[in-house]
Length: 139
Image 1 (cartoon, rainbow, N blue to C red):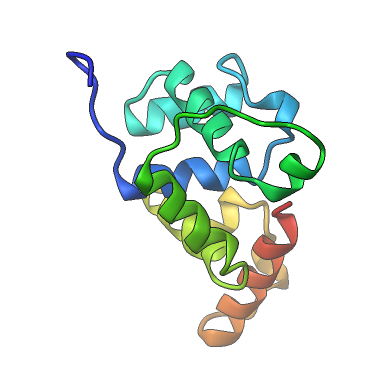
Image 2: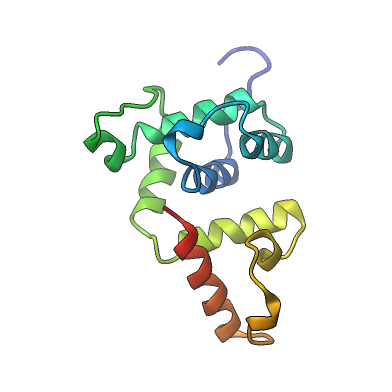
């Protein structure tokens, strides 16, 4: 590891894969405002975020099927987070949005443009509705 670099944390990778799932392959670059926003949130450079997104692309079977390779420097933790995420589409998009909500200090509903007028007041039903809306917005 180069001087000044730091290892990625699990939570940072979860936030990065959250963004990866929302962006088409052609928008995984350092000048994308969403990449810059995530970089600012987790104190990383936009270049490091973009590179991590392309690392995830190398693990994505849908891109492999199209002949797109992505970057080849994935870490063991990259692969673990990818596999956990990829095999648990029912829970992890929502869980990653809860993490993002906490990091951004904004309600999950506001981050996902979910009108609170249409939601039940509180409880499990509200959470299920939010989870379903979030899961629909991924891929």
